[in-house]
Amino acid sequence: MAKSNKIYTNEHHFTTEFPILKVLLLHQHFNQPAKGGAIRSYYLAKALVDKGIETIVITAHNEKIYKKQILEGIEIHYLPVAYDNKFGFAARSFSFLKYNLGAIRVANKIKHIDYCYAISVPLTIGLVAMWLKTFRKIPYLFEVGDLWPDAPIQLGFVENYFFKEFLFSLEKRTYRSAKAVVALSPSIEAIVKKKMGLPASVHQIPNMADCEYYQPETKRTVLEEKFKVKGKFVVSYIGAVGVANGLDYFLECANASRKAQLPIQFIICGEGALRERLKNNAAQLGLSNLTFVDFQNREGVKELLNVTDASFICYKNVPILETGSPNKFFDGLAAGKMIIVNFGGWIKNEIELVHCGVFVDPAHPTDFVKKISPFLSNPVQLKNYQAAARQLGETKYARKILSEKFSSLFK
Image (spheres, rainbow, N blue to C red):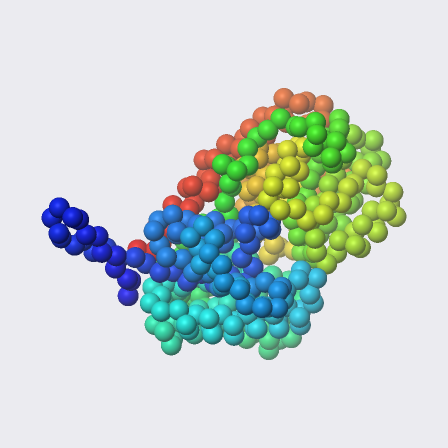
């Protein structure tokens, strides 16, 4: 049950009671804005706090001790559970299960929880949510950002038939036991509805464009010098550098542009398992038009977006990856950047509909040269696409709009 707050007035000496909800948010990869990375769960927690909802987060960090922190009204519990994008499948699985056990232990000490909000990836976070529902009678909402187990299966990480069947069974039980499911894209919403057979309890709340923090800006000379892009058309990839991101294609686009003698500087900003291999490949190809930038916090990303003309959203050519809701897409919209994608699906349809971006054929990097050339010769067309990107972010994906939609789920 929700707690109550009592308000006493000196003049009339009467009491008014109103309920205060307490929401437990489970997310192993909770990030703070100052540290960088995907911060959707921070936005969600802040949206609840701003509505007067008591919000507790159980997450993990790579330190060796448990830590508790209060951040902008959010109570955060950090479990000592190591995780790295470079981990193999076995190490990741161990990390996920260790987090689950720790999350149950900490959640057990928290009294009077009204709702649990469980964020995947991984899918196994659903085990904690179902445990809390069974033994603590706490209803949960389950967020689906990537379709598991479809994604690791299509990427070749899960091959054992019986393990696949176990994961599909876990997925269905997790969805159907939830009070509601939150899907991060229209594609995920449609697939979840089909699997659940309960369309009324599925809500679509994509990632957010922080249109207050990111703004369309004139390029700053000091930043052009910092990133060595003075006088260049800049195409940036900002995000994870892993298998799913298919950044070999990004290198191929840089190579095709070099051969075509286009004045483009390509930038890869981020960290991940494939970063060193990609750097070696770029060196072997002699890609002087490609720069690698270390992982940046939110302020660093803002600086890089300042000098960026087009934001490249890159994925390996695997169908299930077309359903996702990548943070870098929404940051690009908020900053008013032209969008480039090399995959089909809902984002491709969206950017083509409002004319804020282009699709490039993942099988032919020369298609990038063909599609980008008109924007190099026509700055007005580029500015029109960039303005359309910002407008899409403001009108459909603004943080303020989606935060209101999210907090309204808890009544």
